[in-house]
Image (cartoon, rainbow, N blue to C red):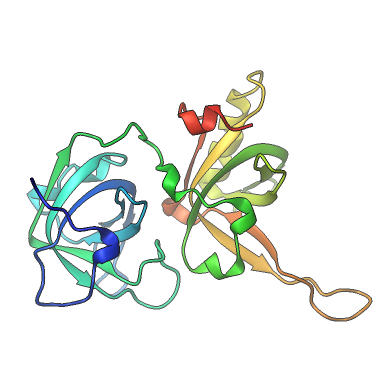
Length: 248
């Protein structure tokens, strides 16, 4: 029986590249190198069976990776990758390591371990547990949509503002920007007449701001909201999954 490493077991040792993972491609997004002005290259956010997530970067246009950028949601086997430490700042996962594909890396699509084509609910971040310390990496969550506001007066900065609540009455503000704003508006319009609308948010960034209290002059607790983070973020209305169907 093939042994697979867990993403939580990864450690930094440049001499070790014989890692073997069985993971789902949770999210794919492209980027350009500001140093060499080259690209596009691809980053893959991987999630294993335990829900642990880690990013893998693929540089170049190797034939073995061609077409993989269209396989989001698929389960894959990955062999022989390098382990690196991420740069400081905002990261796509909360892992202290990331992976880089090399010319020896092999990737094979395998049969799915479950039917969660859009999201693995082990990764869902409950609204009451969101904290300003989560701002360094994107999170996944879900909730019932209410109180929507469209802001399209300025074509340079379109926004859809809405709120989501969970099934214990916790709620949070969400802001879809740029192309996501138009997609959210159109998608929500298509959901009219279907009753309660549930949205699953994938890889959204948590933001915060402090409000000064008028009478004391001190700052109160931070206001938190979720916002799209470029091509990294995605969303889906009422995906046909048991957890969504049972959510009320």
